[in-house]
Length: 385
Ligand code: FAD
Ligand code: DHB
Image 1 (cartoon, rainbow, N blue to C red):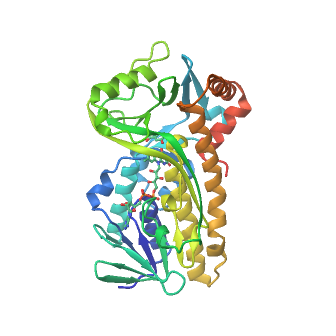
Image 2 (cartoon, helix red, strand yellow):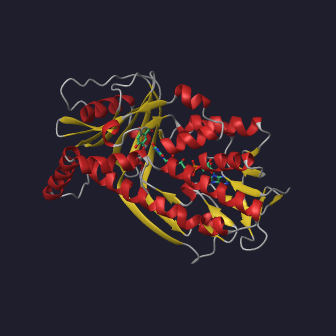
Image 3 (cartoon, rainbow, N blue to C red):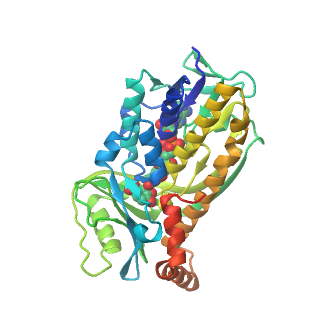
């Protein structure tokens, strides 16, 4: 089998890349380890920057997103018994975010690829990249896929980054001493906007998917097991962390899904080795507090599509040569913002009273200074990089 771009991974990065390439007349094949159902059910991100919405819309996969996505014009920071709104309409006029589940983006992309005759092979074990600095090819289950370039879109635990010889990539990393328990529940949201709550018991986030479905996150110890969190415990802890302002009542309902996500910061430099281009979580991870991971993946593959199209159309490798540095500028801005939001809002077991006061002082600053609030808003909606 032969294609122009061999794509490993059918997450948002791989699927969108495949579709954007198709729209530029470039052929690709996507190889995915898991089955289609698993890919479409994996509950993860929810916050789409305007730039992400624009890319999806321009690619023709924005119809359901426009109908069902929930536009948001602010978020609340809740701490010390009060809520403080970060008002996008005042701080970053004309900018907003849209809440729409990543699994819905994935469903829309898979449907669009298949409708256009795109090739996605699901349930493919043992994908291996070869000859990355020569004529690259992928092997899987006795088959060979020859290609001009390989796009490593296989997430943090994938095989493409691992196939690069030792010493060719530099990695930068930070671990956090906690994780997030993500909860999807069949209950109406308890507020119209997202609530990022810092409490002495730990961080909590109130989000949503639709008028009937809520999404929550709780800071939990690192390596926490899901079964340590029966539904009653989830609801009582969410109530303890969110019902901290007068008049706020948490609505409860059946939990549909729950899972624990480790918190990690990670960057690979460069995002290229020979004819292998890394994109999305395969190249970098941010802790989810800043809601940047999916948006970075979209930015990477948009850039990679432009660079590949230029190469195929004109023979110029300038875009491809600039790919890594161009992406990394945005990646590092998101790294800093995500690290900063994480430190601002979580409780750290080893924090002394001085550190706790500093954290409150910082939150007071962000919620009282227009300059500081604007910085948060500009980063959150994805205006700066
Ligand atoms: P992935 O989604 O990880 O896709 C990689 C694909 O490659 C998967 O389908 C995987 O099965 C496949 N694969 C892996 N190994 C192989 C292999 N060996 N062979 C073939 N295929 C393979 N981001 C935001 O922007 N906003 C948010 O609000 C947000 N919230 C989040 C909340 C949580 C709880 C989590 C976990 C993440 C959140 N993120 C958020 C991050 C976002 O989900 C990721 O950044 C995003 O999924 C990255 O997409 P990707 O396509 O690069 O990688
Ligand atoms: C959601 C996820 C995030 O990481 C975040 O910061 C805000 C919202 C969500 O899944 O809705």
